Amino acid sequence: MGYRWAGLLVIAACSGGPGKVSAPNAGLQERQIQFQGESYRFWVFAPSSYDAAQALPSVMLVHGAGGNGLDFLDIWRGFAEKNGIILVAPTVPYGIPFELNVVPQLYPKLMDSVRSEWSIDPRRIYLFGFSAGGYTVFDAVLPDSSYFAAAGVFAAVITPEFDFLIQRATRKIPIALYIGENDSVFSLSEAERTVDLLRANGFSVRYTVFPSLGHDYGAVADQVNADVWQFYAQASLP
Image (cartoon, rainbow, N blue to C red; front, side):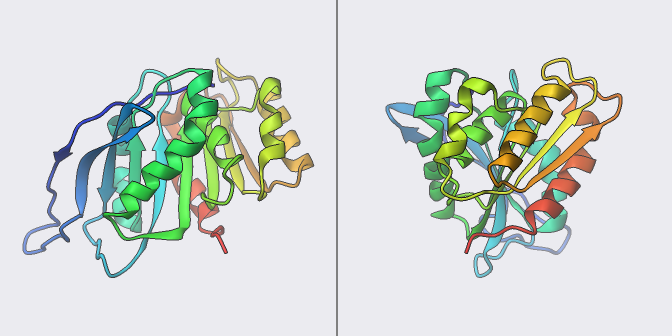
């Protein structure tokens, strides 16, 4: 497991269409957060329909190895615009110390900083990660299962040395797991072991295998995003 982040402050304005004025915090904006002596850069996208008087659901997105938050956010941007979702996407580093010692505290803190500027429904905050980013989804939602309402991963598993994370969960958070049949990084047996482990411990899991697909989230992103959002829509915190 492992991951990455950086820092700086940039504001990018975005308007709706002709004759339509977007809310002050609609569009794409860049932020940074300081945590444990490090700066982490992240991007926030709010749809043009954003109105601070109405709290919206939010999905935090964590990219895979070699990726970055902005590119990963772009994959979700059109869907979020149509469905009224606020996206939050950091750029994160890799390494087990980061995963175990930073992620469980950083992700909620980062989301809290976003909530200080944008109107987000605290009962409907979700987490989605691809590959290496999916590792950190497990790292975040199992120890702090009372912050995120549901989680999803594409091409990510829980390896045996991290099974202990299951025992840290204070809530059986719903989790969706997607993988390609011919994934070159994780085998179907590893994915099925993860699903079996979660279900045996009382977790609700949606498991989807894409026939003939490799380690390629982009090829099925539209289908996955729509499906995982349907899954998320069924889950909210008390």
